[in-house]
Amino acid sequence: MREALLSLERDGLLTQRERSFGLPDYSPGQMTDLFIVRQQIEPYAIRRIIETQPVSKIDAYVAWAREQLNSKADTETYIAAHQEVRTALLQLCPNPFIRNAIEMFDHQTAFIRQRTLRQPENLTLSIKLTNELLDALAQHDPEATEAAANASLVAAHEALKTTIRQE
Image 1 (cartoon, helix red, strand yellow):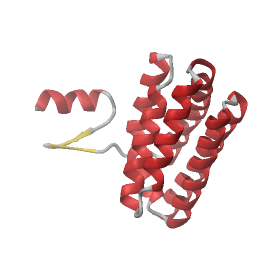
Image 2 (cartoon, rainbow, N blue to C red):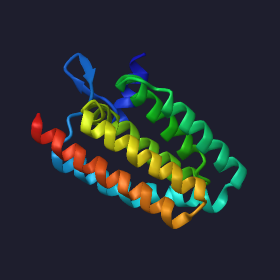
Image 3 (cartoon, rainbow, N blue to C red):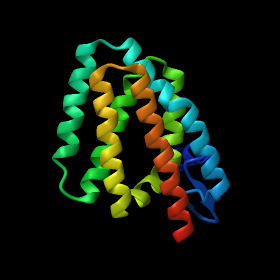
Image 4 (cartoon, one colour):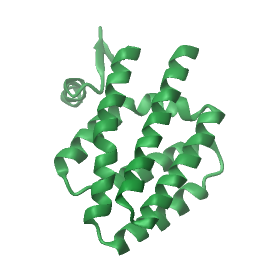
């Protein structure tokens, strides 16, 4: 158990605090840096999905994702479904190095994503932007998909900054 916790600490997912472990405390500047890196990687990764995956695979993903997200009635189940849908999408990325980098950043920002999505205005915006991304994927348009992914990240970054200011 201790080795697993130390491994998570080494990966930056936990910090050791005296005799216990906790989530890392990122400064607003560090969170901004994380989002800048995500904005450089994720839209490109999602574009590559459109460029490399068969249409049938993308269509099946879009149908599945819509079903997962539309069946969630409350905030907590939506947050869980959103993460599941996001993870499944990124698994379609053909480049394992990009996938691993995104997963690392995803783990480091998961706690703030949950806090921001619990705010009603951010939840509403997330639903809208996620549907726009799914629409772009369904159109099989690399540029529209990349733009939709970027718009989601810009909105997430703004939600993060607002959340940090409020806390």
